[in-house]
Image (cartoon, rainbow, N blue to C red):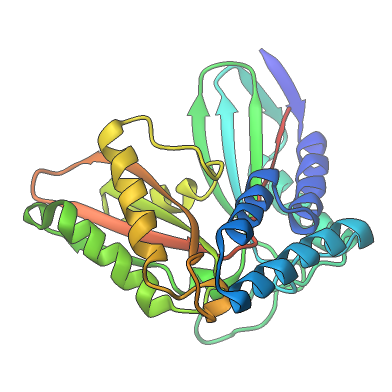
Length: 280
């Protein structure tokens, strides 16, 4: 059995918090560049050029891509043959504390959601999702999530009889109502099935899939393509100024569900779709 000290996990999370906030993943960069080449609306072209200039400047200067450095969403795939020497969750929280402190990243977490909205001062707690998987690998993905896009996310308990058209209508209505608020071009994660909470988790996890990588099931692959086309036909465009590039991709994740249910969640991410991973 492989043993991993908690200190190594803290060190990795610290690095990932900084890396994710300073460098946009290559798949997202490529999609934005492709959107710029496909745009015919001058205003949309200019906005996409400014977005590209921004992430290139962040690279050169070593500064955050966005001033909202996000809630630290951490996805953990824990191999069954691994023993963590210490408290795994606390090691992750400590990594977030150190990463946001040492990276001079904005701390945006309040300790109580309603009555005592006082900043925790270190961007903790992290929002941690665990999956136990076979093997001797611990994979950690840090995906900082800004409020502008998170606030535009929605969930609905659709009826099975709503079918494909009901799902499409809900996704399109969510994006239409979001308008320019989530800083398009956006990445749209859709979670279908499971329970109320599982659908939301699926939608968030869908945002980690590389842009351009499709669902392996041909029916869902077709649904993703149809949704992307319909979303871009809304004409919201980059930063809401119009154009054909409202979304870079739509990713759908699914799960078995109750015979009487069809939960559908939409989690929207802005063009700064950040995530960084490490394996220990």
